[in-house]
Amino acid sequence: MTDYNERVPTVVVDDVHITYKVNGARTGKGSATSALSRIVSRRQTPGVREVHAVKGVSFAAYKGEAIGLIGSNGSGKSTLLKAIAGLLPATKGRVHTQGQPSLLGVNAALMSDLTGERNVVLGGLAMGMTRAQIRERYEGIVDFSGINEKGDFITLPMRTYSSGMGARLRFSIAAAKSHDVLLIDEALSTGDARFQRRSKERIKELRKEAGTVFLVSHSNKSITETCDRAIWLEAGTLRMDGPAHEVVAEYEKFTGKK
Image (cartoon, rainbow, N blue to C red; front, side, top):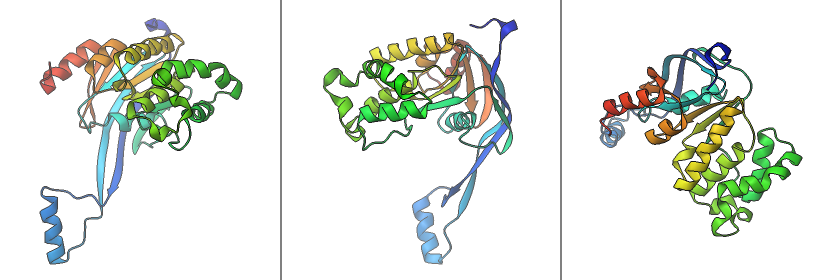
């Protein structure tokens, strides 16, 4: 934990609103009945619906923090991560970052037709590692992922991997280097208990290396075990920001979870 007087901001989110358009979206209930009605009456299909995913969110994150983002499905967590990573523009407000944010998601783009081995190289290069650094860390990446524990899977195309195997490899590649800001979207919800323990330990190490970690997860246990701070988004608005245990407790009251 960084001393308050020495805290250095790495991310500042200032009154951020994010809206995007969904093409061909249907509104209202009974879409099948509505579709039949449109066919009979020859009305046109509705064209575009605007979604206001993030609504006036503001906070600052600091070096050495691990921050959990929690909230119901569709609350804007993943959208906000993409904005922090610079992949999605804010419609209103600003996102300021110190250093280069790296977004690691379950759906992060590795190439399914290439082997795991080749994807380790490409993923490392995409994160700014040199080929020499990748060679030096290759065995550690493969061992950390556990991909080869039940066979020589690292030499097979990634399309043959289960979703859990792919997510473990993605996390292992991202965790092989230090990050100014590391954004993790649901990666720790996959894999067995042993891999999750290794992942949590690695996140602690990344924090000690003066980075900031954001973690989106539907596992409240992962948030309280990995993060010291949590931000609760609900329907695109910031509902609570504070110590992880306190925020998760309030969120569980809200959702009726135990």
